[in-house]
Length: 328
Image (cartoon, rainbow, N blue to C red; front, side, top):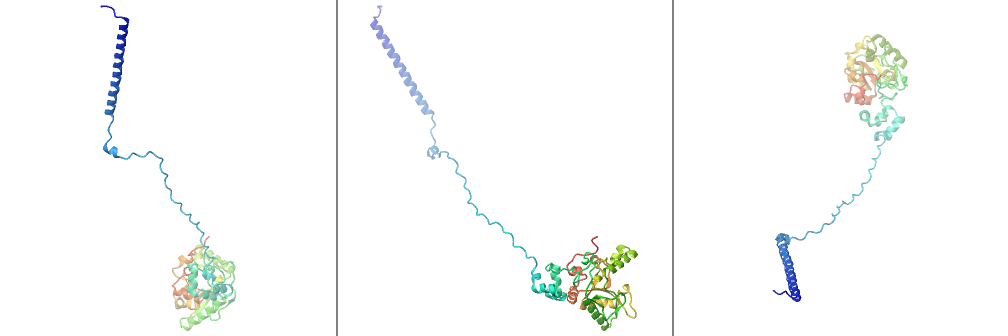
């Protein structure tokens, strides 16, 4: 076979390259078409719900938390008004004047009488009334309250005139002496009997000797049940008196219990301003044994309130603590 000419060979090579190019183009086109189809087929189709749902808003910074409106500042608490320095009863001009220049009876009257006075003291509404003040008719002297000063001496003094004085001088504070005369006359008038004074005012020095004598003969514990220590004796106030029955001869302290005179005093002593200071069964409060002969003058107004209220001790009457023994 004759060899092809150069022109013919170039034509063949050209024709072959064209065919190769066409094949490559066709292949590329086919690849592109197939790839596009695959991609279209693989993409998921949104559901109707997803298609209809509104697009989610883009994420934004959270809204600031609302803060409550500021509460108006409360006004600063104010201190309570200072309490009055003393209750109104002590500011009463009548009470002030009576305490400054009146008698004890006038002070009692200014506070509303015996019961008004007692109630004001017992409730603490009358701090201007000092029940430990020596020289006052209402003074309370016991094992917890000593006289101030210890050697207090009452004035003015007087001797009762209508009653027999058995022992001692029978001196008392003048108002107590007058009241005892009235009492002694009344018990005779009632046909009950006759009283005598066995012991009345005792100075501090006398009480020293008396108490020491009891201690020496009975011991301190027994002495404290019968006799007051110096400075703690009601007899030193001039307002206390020990009485005995003197029918056909005067008896003793111990013999006074159970007498008609003793019974009469229980019912009538208050009418003259006296009380029986140490009653039976009151030792736990007063610290002393029963002494029906020991009379204590507190004035008619207070004695009437004492009797009407059924009180048995001055401690209870004035709302004071029991005083069964000494502090030391």
